[in-house]
Amino acid sequence: MNLIFLIVVQAFDKVWHPDLFKLKLFLPLSYYLIFKSYLNKRHVFVSLGIEYFSIFPLLAGVPQGAVVSPTLCNLYFTDQPINLNTQIAVYTDKKAIYATYTNPDIVLSTLQSHLNDLSHWYSPGASELIKTNLFTPPLHSNTKNLLRYI
Image (cartoon, rainbow, N blue to C red; front, side, top):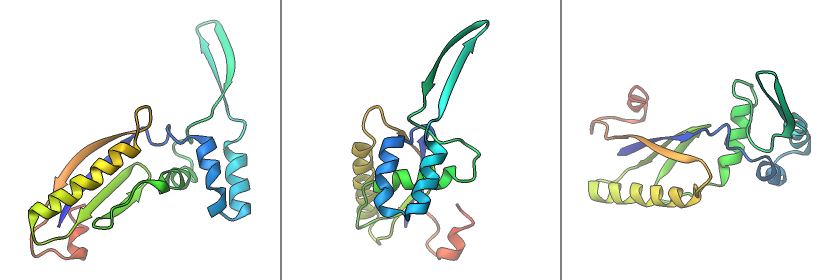
């Protein structure tokens, strides 16, 4: 088994509200209305010294530190490409992609294929990915033992 750990740069800032609201088909109406009221009509006001600038609407981003923000971030990134030969674990801006084959060349090829798909999904102007680590656990590891490496 090989694992690749990824971090989505500025994931909380990249949640585009109009695209997030398209996911309403998958949510109960009450959740959708709560999330929409939470993000709707958010504005930013900028001042520099004694100068004040106009109020601008915020069309992207979820407040970091808010209880609901990780859920909104996870919802936004649900339509990422999948690869039938890999598994992926996601929590907001952190991802672990892993594949299990006895042949290491197949593992690396499979992981690279998944990374290529993700790089196309994260188009220019969208979030960036940073590969943080490629990890090969000891052969005797089972799923329970892997938790101590993560």
